[in-house]
Image 1 (cartoon, rainbow, N blue to C red):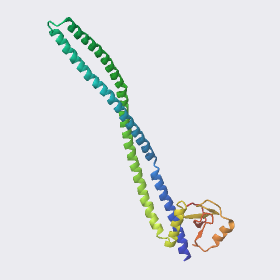
Image 2 (image 1 turned 30 degrees about the vertical axis):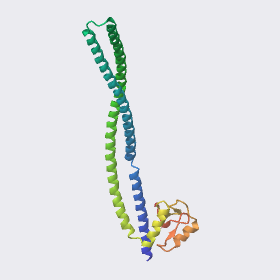
Image 3 (image 1 turned 180 degrees about the vertical axis):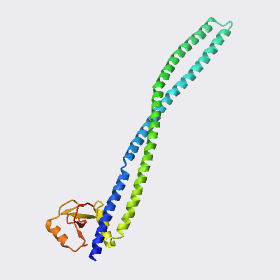
Image 4 (image 1 turned 135 degrees about the vertical axis):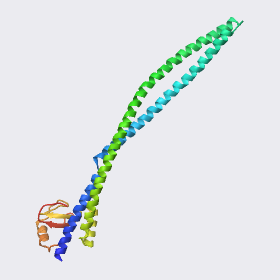
Amino acid sequence: MADDSAAALLALLCVQDLDTAVAQLHHRRAALPERQQLAEVSASLADVGRREEELQATRAGVARQQADMEQQLAAIGARRRAIEQRMYAARGASARDLQAMDEEIRQLGHRVEEMEDAELELMVALEPLDAELAGLHAEHGRLEGLAGSLAGEVAAAEEEIDRELEEQEAERRAAAGGVPPDLLGRYESLRGRLGGIGAARLVGNRCSGCHLELPSMEVDRIHRLAPGAVVTCEQCGRILVPQSGTGGA
């Protein structure tokens, strides 16, 4: 019976070691450096996308102004040509009427010059917008490629860790089969309350769970108990298993 109890405690320590390994694997999976890099690249990609949208909206506004100006220039040109045709075709028109038509043609010419200068300014304004948009499009493509590569690395790393998790969890189930249900339930309760460690080794006079030293009298008392006796650390309350060598749970 004592041998069975001692074996159960050793099996419990094995369960604890495997639970620790599983927890470390879950942490490793969640904290993959590639995942952090992917998050950073995704954030940069979103920033580039927002900047692209802003610039495209600005460019569209300038392009609309240019298109409106071209329509106005076309209308002024048509008006000017119509007046010129009337002027050339006019026979017997009074000098006053001819002068009025000539004055309107001259004013329309000035208006065309002003609008052409304004249109040129709009065309110049489009050049840096187009250049920046081209740079952003190139950066967008680079970041998309990098994000795809990192996503593949994350998936590969997760697959490898998941295989390790399956192996460790299978070993854990096998080890748990050697622990009496009441002891295993007590361990699970402690593990839930004490940061994932419900069973610890007593190495020398130190608990490997809380890393505190126990009084010498308590250590002597534990070592005098029958093999397989279930004791707890008076410092942290974890199930304590005496060890002759070094180790940690």
